[in-house]
Length: 82
Image (cartoon, rainbow, N blue to C red; front, side, top):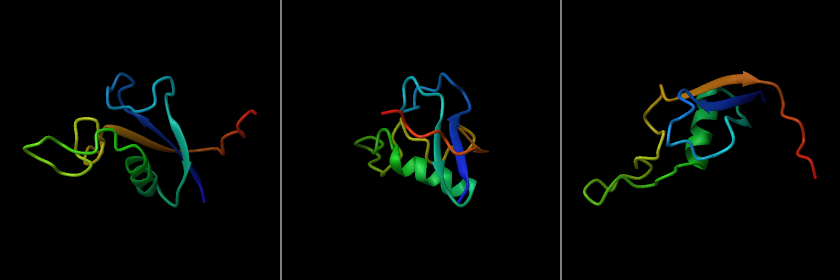
């Protein structure tokens, strides 16, 4: 299974849930699966508003905004240092 780097197109995007990290690297079968895994793991604000209580569509969500995230093939990340 290949590795993908997921990062925001705009480094200053306030929806990015990982302060201090410019990208997250994860394993997936395809770029679309990598995006879906990221969106599932980091829903940010899981609900819109009281008027629009739609799951995973809050202001902090990347769901439905395909242009906001870049998903690129990458090498396997180094193991974490203990």
